[in-house]
Length: 286
Image (cartoon, rainbow, N blue to C red; front, side, top):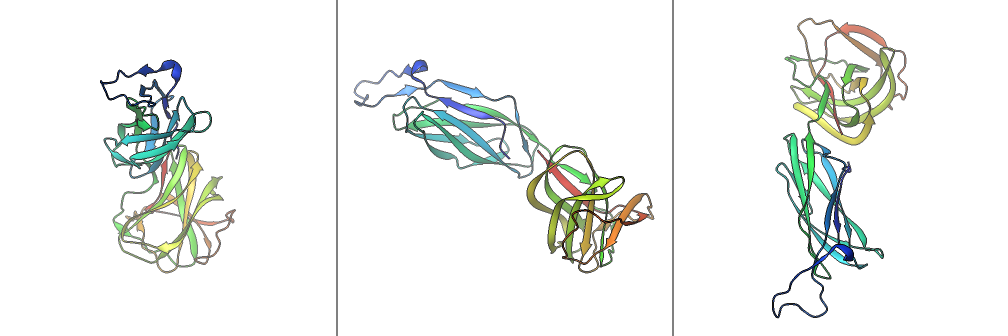
C-alpha cells in the first residue's frame, strides 16, 4: 500500500539561507545551504496495524540537477522504517524521490514518521520533516473468536457460510481457527447473490491447517463493504471450530466438490441447511 502523502524537501535558490561559515572552515567551491522545507499532505495517512507494510515517499528537489541526496529516516512510536538511510540522485530538473518501507506494529492510533535530508554533493542539509500517520486496526469479518466445539467437516463438499464486511478497503488475509492441526484446506471467497454464493473474488490454494489461529496473507484484493461467502473444502475430515450448542440460525450452502480442483468462477446452485457458524473470517485493511 502506498501512503497518500508526500514529504517534500525543497532546495530552491530563491528560498535558501546562506550558512555563515566558521573562520577557516568554508571550503572553496562548496555551497552550504539550509534548504526551504515544506510538508505536503492532505491529512493523516491511514496505515494498517499488525505488521502490515506501507510505502513512505519523500519527494526531493535540488537547485542543481543530478545531485546525490542522502535522506535519513527516524522510526515511529510503534513500527519500523527500512532502510533508515536512502540515497537519491535527482534528475535533470533537480527532482527525485525516496521510497522506503514502513512496517507497522500492533498498536492502533496516531504515530509519526520523520525524514531529513542530511547531505548532498553540495553539502546541503535540511530540518526534519514529520508526517502524521494514523495506524488503524484491521477488521476481522466473520467469526474469529475461537468456538468451544471442534468441527467435523466431511470430505467432498465445498461448504461455507456468509460473512459480513463492514469496511471498504482491501482483503489482506484469509483466516480460520482450528483447535487441532490438519488436514489440508482449500478456500474460495464469493460475492453474495440473492442469499447464495455468486462470483469468486479471492481464493486460497490448498494448504495444511495448523493448530490455533490461521491467518494467511494474500495479495491485497479490493473489497467493498457487504456480504460474502467463505467456502472451504478439505482433503480429510476438517476440524475448524464451530459454534455448537445445537445452534440452527446460520444458513450453510454447499456443493459436491473434490479437494484441489479448480474453484468455480460462478458458484453453481447450492444445496443448503440451517446450522451453526464456523470459525471462518476475512481480514480487511486499507
